[in-house]
Every structure is written in C-alpha cells, then in structure tokens.
Length: 281
Image 1 (cartoon, one colour):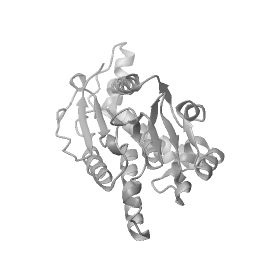
Image 2: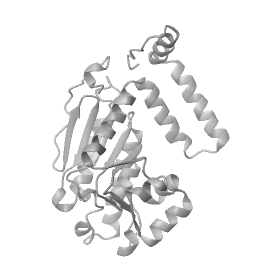
Image 3: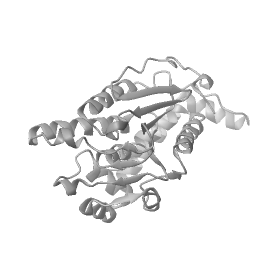
Image 4: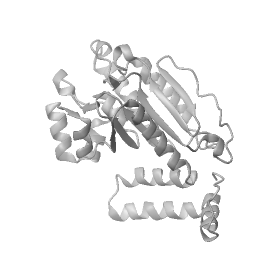
C-alpha cells in the first residue's frame, strides 16, 4: 500500500490532528481514518459529535499544505452502526430556534467535507439512518458492509431531513427515488442502496470494508494530488450548473491543471515512459 512516506513534499506528514471527545483520528500512511466513537449510542450525532466534526474539518481544510494524507476514511465504532442518526434524546428538548442552530452547524460540517482537497470515503458499517445517511452522502464515495442499512426516517418522528438529505439524496439516486425514500421513511439494505446508486461498493464485513477504502485511497495517492483536488472542485461546482456553464467550469479546471508542476511532471514522465513522482504543486 502506498503510504505517506512514499509521497514527495510531505511537509507535516505526521501532523497533530487534534484531540476529540467523540472521535478517534488515526493516520495510516496516506489514509486518515476518522471514527465516530459513541458505540453505546450507536454513534448518534449528539451536539458534541457535531462540534468535534466541525473542529476536525477545520483542521483538515489545510490538507493541501504538503499533502500529509491523500484521503479520509470516515466510519463508526463497532459493527452495529456507522451513525444511527441525530441524537433523538437531545432533539426531544429542542425548540425551532435551537433545532435550526443544530441543523445549520451540521450542514456546515457537510459543506466542509465536500470542500476538502482530498477524497472522503464513508465506510458504512451497520446503520446509516437520518443524519448518518446525510453525513455519508457528504462524502465523495460511500462503501458499505453487507450488514449496512440506509434511510431517511425523519417523517416517522414528524420531522424532515435537516442535514442535507433533501438536496444530496436526489442528486445521488434521482428525484423519484429520493421522494419515495423520504416520504415513506423506508430503510433499505446495502444491496438495494448499491442497486439504486447510493452506494459505490458493498463488502462482506467490516475488515474488508476498511481495507477496500484504504486500497482506493492508496490508488488515488499514486495520482497527482493537485489534479485530484482540482477535479473534486470542478465536479462539485458543475453539479449545480447547466451544460454550457458546466463546460465553462470544466475548461477553467483544465486550464488550471496545465499551470501545475504536477502536470509538467506527469506529461514528461508519460513521454519518457517512466512513473511520475509528483511534487504536489
């Protein structure tokens, strides 16, 4: 597996990622493994979890400084749950104003995840319901163990999605399927989630799930980091645009790539029939 030690210009490769009450953050070569660590509560998104995710995503926003890691894998502690959803015990005491603050903060976390310059893989083990499904959808890819299940069950509580589900679910599976899942609150299996395009891949168990996520990050780590970051920015921007505006954004991204050292190195290595060593600039 390609690790951080194999990457050039790795300033800060062993950087301090911070200490969190509800998260475990571990660097494994090119991979940063982030685990929501509240297994007794099925890793539900209590206010403290949201604040920890907010703080961590702020640290991760500077990942392009030396490319200390090349991908983030987000998972949940144990095999029962990725994130079972919002913390209903806390939510039961909320009024509309406090609910709005809670929802906006979690939405900000999801936007930060989408804006990171490296890919984020949700490694979903067990429940990904409500806020857990919404957190997973803010990641670039969703990988699932065979026992995973997904859903937006908010209507059963007299609520609606509040962390981005109304926006991101229809982008992933289409408006018709999104309406059906949100209106019914139905829970679907990993196999069904894969069939409708919500999930990229399904793995037999949690160890193979995490290994699959690490392998994908290792594959990406062999590519030009500036190009991957550029591609992620372009794809996010184009998602909301029409064809002509999308093509304009794509050519902007294409032009930007030609101004990087990574592009010069990659093209020269191809012509010379050798493997490139990207400087990350």
